[in-house]
Image (cartoon, rainbow, N blue to C red; front, side, top):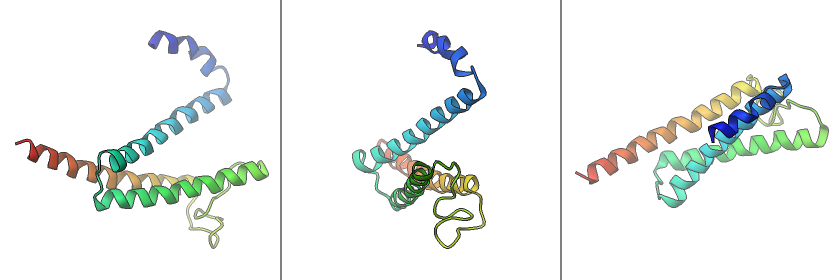
Length: 130
């Protein structure tokens, strides 16, 4: 597989725009897998502690933000709309945060409870095997 990927390297970095698009495609796919892991934890593994429920609700809001940003782009063709809550956003002008800063905080707020819930569940599993 590594040999196959190496074959694409010259094309991935052929232009600065293609390099940026490649980075975005890989990072967004990683972001998607984060949410796939959440859904597996909640719906298949049954990990339903309060932290995971809170993370799911928060992730839903984050998804709504992305939907508004994408809908604005598709409607107007303008890149970089603020969404709902970043500075200039649709909800009361938003918070005094740039969109990248707000989305960093969204991901941080989603990741911390997820990691705490994971730690709690790992400890439960460890104790039950003793």
